Length: 438
Image (cartoon, rainbow, N blue to C red; front, side, top):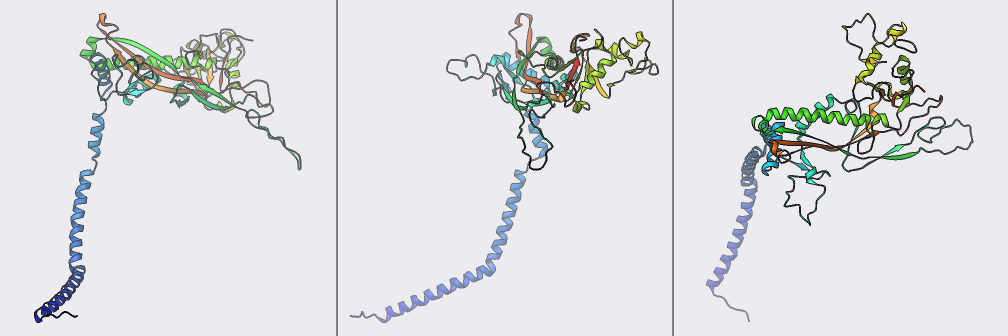
């Protein structure tokens, strides 16, 4: 049965329906108006506010180069003296500057060394902190090496430098000892006709190993010097460490035995020892034969290295065989009378520079004069220079002990001299005079 409604209820129903339609219509129209008018305005306002906020954010995030440089400088030692002072304080007072970096004798890097209390059973350690030191800052290290190179022959004249990240560096190589019938240790190319069988060939590969050795030095300075002048200390330590480091490292690169030290050029298997013409002398014939025995590809890069005792022989050398020009009545050919004693001596022999070094062998012994192409000498840099200090070693003398340590490897790249395609005299990038005449 249908429900009957009153007139009042009917009027209310109609009113609700009409109102709903009106509200819906207004909402739709309002939405259109917002899209056409209000929305662009609001969007523009939002974009403006967003751009302003972005600009302010960029300003806040923008890195000032000057401020960045200032911060970087603040994080570095301003001088070698400041670094040395920090090292001494770290060891003496156990106050560690956060800018210090410690490296133990095995190359492990930490912010500071372990204390004796920390070196207990159960602690994992690589190396011994007592044998390590504080890494020298890059700027100060550059100064040390600059001084070292002033007295060095091998490193600054083209030696091949290899960074090492472990205690061994294995280097593959081609075993090339003779060019009589093949090259590269076995490769052969032949002229052949059509439909002729070819014989396969291949190079001979080998491997050698670079092993770093430790070079350490020590000196002492009075505590008064430390307290009164860090500048004077920096000069003392820099000169002492830099010069001695360059001297003894270079001495090993030239004369090293390979036992506990680098293998020096003079003792390498590939170095040719050419017999000299006259005992205890260097003649024109000697240097001519040395030049002829040099590997042809090294004529533009090799350098002469002589012991100072050889210089008088070069200055009096004449074109001939036997004694010096003065005694034999020959004309001088390296220097002449027109040059006079006031003129500097020539800086080259056969167009290649020469250097004098007391690290070369004495006159009349093997290696008193050498012709070396340094690019065939390998240097492995294992550990940068570290410096450490101790106030206890010379406590009763009121002195501080300073120690520097570096680890380096060195050896000649070729394993032997090369027999040429034609001829019997071998060739090598390293040639020197033998002690004997035959």
